[in-house]
Length: 130
Image (cartoon, rainbow, N blue to C red):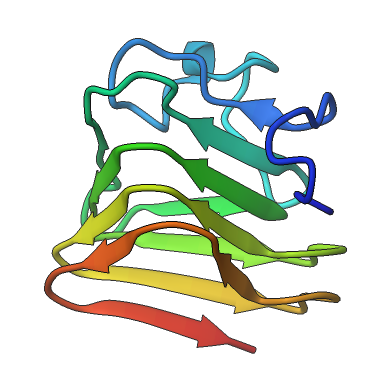
């Protein structure tokens, strides 16, 4: 996926929920939790920080991921990004990972990760490219 446009990927499964549950199907534009064959966008257009949680032992899968704008991931789980056609993980503006997070980037055809804005991490954030 080429995220050079920043946001207007009509094929992406976009987070549209009002709560922090990434594993609730109704929180996604396509009506289901993203899978390993889908591009994902999690964008916060508000100036207020939003927090999302991936519980210990849980795994969130996608083909590529765009994360943008005042977002905190309070994770102890795993994010798998696999088989992207462009940038696998694009972080743009004010993204913070806290606690233990493992991000596996596998089989990326382009850049594994691109950071365009602020990216902070606290605790252990493992970023693994296979």
